[in-house]
Image 1 (tube, rainbow, N blue to C red):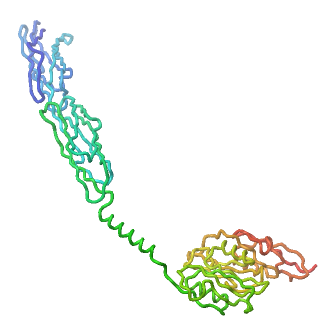
Image 2 (image 1 turned 120 degrees about the vertical axis):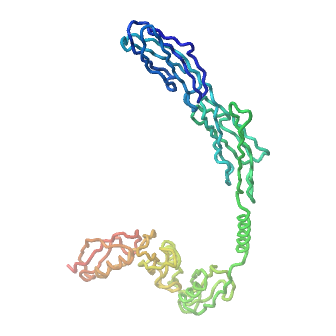
Length: 452
């Protein structure tokens, strides 16, 4: 058997067909069937039109192979080898082969897209994505150039040239930034992006827009100016004037209440030279009838004989501040209780007993009432609590007094004999009466077991 082909090389464009003719000659002495098979890279787009021939001795027959590369990214442009094998059916070991090459011409089919075509924002920076799509069968590379008139934008393409393999995409980023910010109306910037494609005589141009919004819209600037002007007017406007009330002759407690209710902050000063009855309001500073701004301070002078002090005004103070004010006045903190009052800050003093302005002996214990929120339990106060005097009280009364002061009694009672304290009444406590402790502290009660 012998095979030969006049031409084994073809050059084709995608979508074009071409044939290779192979002549098979039978040199044996009996009738045989010969099969034809195609292999190699070009076999992907090749077809054997006559896959088998039957020959008598001394005869020959042509075999046609057609090659048609597809109009798509595959096969790639370039040389593709093939091998055509002819084998005898009676003598499989007898094989003849014809080798050849099919060259596929390159086809450039590329497009450039930019997304988005328009950007908007108040920020100075913005970004566009440039995509090079390669629908051809050969690699393509395209330089990207940006044209922008004026100096209001800074533009750059990264990388400046995009490459895409057949059937693939390549990308670049167009980064831009405004050279300045402004207020008022939005500014519109237009610029062009040009991509040079292989095989084309010109460039693919894409018009783009950047709508630069102002940092502050004009209406917002006007609103800010109006607000600033209003604030300036309010700050420069004189405060509300109220007159200091005439409280001379009233009790110190009533005078302090009246002044405080009128919108003033009261400080009580004892006057030990006065011949008036103890606890009588004598005068104010500023004097009655003086016009002062709301929340101004006023000093109330109250008659206080030697050996007595005046309960200071502590309403509105925190528990800690009230304790300090009482100590400074020569008084002690007595029982501390709480009640719901949403008009003041939780933990603030809402009442005292005796009232502010009342003359009492030095060292007298003043009870305070602190505000708590309407949620039921207010947050624990941070100011110290004074242990109340429990001597002589029954155990139940002592426990109730401790609870009212924000303290708790120990589960176990200590006992000791006493000639003076009735049996089952409190002799003393640990910590002792008058000592300051933390809120919620436990107090151990010592109870009388009677005389020995």
